[in-house]
Image (tube, rainbow, N blue to C red; front, side, top):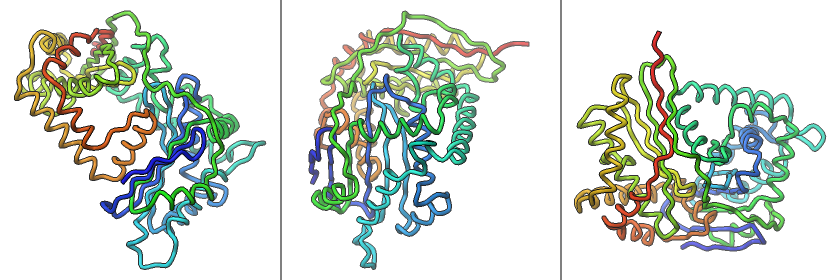
Length: 419
């Protein structure tokens, strides 16, 4: 049973009461328009909040309180959904009914969340604790530097950003290295205070709890004020003119990233998901079976589709002397989807795989919670049965019609620099 409750303007609660899991997951998501957000400041704040607080001013004390909560798992993460930037606080605790204890673990969990969220280690004069903040910032920059040395990651991010006229729409949830470098303990503090006061808040709880229990605890420990937010989840971005870009570096493996514009409305989004699975989104996709397995033209090859930004892309790692052959075959597979109807068998196999993956996710409390948050943010709510029915309803003609709307945008090639 799922209850949806409006706590106040811009603050909503969704509680799924279930005995399926041995834990209870609490997720509190703060959402704001991405193009106006301080991405890097929100990212560094997420790192800081999951490390220390005023009451638990060291990582050791922070770990101790989680142990006292019977090994609770805590994280703060940032993510993108189309034109929305999310800052999500997650706490997973063991189902209190399984404990041989009179302690009210659920109440203690909300007390912990109150302390971490409303009593961070810092103040309005100096911002977040400078010593810890700078240490966290250095760690983050080292991690980003590591990502930048990952050639596949680097070229994919560049392609996504360069696909849109407004590059910020294509930025990763943490921003980029330069943006992170410019964040200070004071600017991040100001960003966090703004987040608490103005972001849309969606709270999703999954586990053996009731909506009344959670509502009372939120009203007592997390009394968020009303706010009005308009979230531009589904974007209609302006894409750049089609272009070919080549990068030369001393690499042992070439990379191909191709991006397409694919504009679909809400009623067509499941067609886009199935099309992506057919092209390169699964282990039985055409790109995997034909380009990688049969032709042996790629070490890795896959596709991804972001319905919220109208962007589909294909990534392939290939031998340095097989770039043209691999690229030609990838484009050929897209052309074939436009010209020929797929077979009934192929469509049913891909659908079955997608349905199996969906059902598997329903057995994982974190995935169930994330799906609940996504539906809360987008205001597109589907039951499990309705979601599966949407997949089943996609036809061969739907796939071809969607494929015909694929417009090639960027062809990005990372080649080996000789000498």
